[in-house]
Length: 333
Image 1 (cartoon, rainbow, N blue to C red):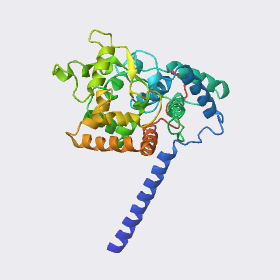
Image 2: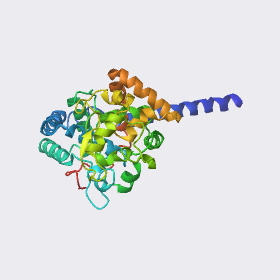
Image 3: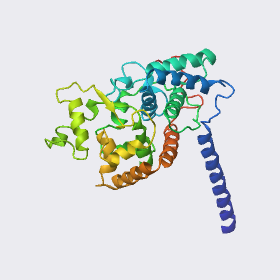
Image 4: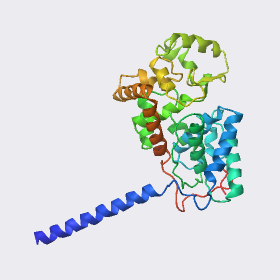
């Protein structure tokens, strides 16, 4: 009897393991790099052409398109909810208001795609491809974008206000937000490296310049010459809308210079510099080591950045019959 029960238990366990393996394969196979090969074979060329045109018109747009994909995936998953208009629009959330940009470029890409493949390609997938192309066209790495996402039906302004990492937050606070969507400390540091391109408004870092944390003095983790330069750019009486490079002395090239700046106390945002300067926690010690590694090896940074972008692009995608393929990215059908 014991032998028979053991045999049944063993077979049952085997069945469970096999089912779990199949489920794992199914989940991973929901998105694929060849998803539109038959339904929209020229998709990648269409998107690349439009992204290239946008960057030629305004080089800053590369960073803006990369950021849109990031801000989309952290709220409701990668479902293009960041593009929706309406009373609950994520565009009106504090991290995005007067900050997130590139919506017109995504609309232009969508129109070009619709002209050739109407009703086939999601806005969420366009965001993912545009982000990859923005990195590549800025001198960064390329990767095969996994596709097959569908578009969400609702925006989540509260989620954008609460879930998006803030430039004023510490390593530990940001790590918690990354962990909430299944990303780890390597992802925190490698994806922060996206700040190797783009600009930031004075409002996102001016608290570091005059009375940091109520000390009556600038943030001591910022290079003193840099403090002086930025105080001139962003006076206390200013409106906070002037901009400066996130990656000082390497504004538009996607490289590992951002990490070299952190080693020299030249990170612009508190959240950036804190990746290196905060050694008071285990998370901070880990991120500091990663910053040092990436500053020494652009190859390692590119490798980890690609892996993290693919992971981020897999945050809770809508697939199959869930969601829809929006005809217009800013409204549901």
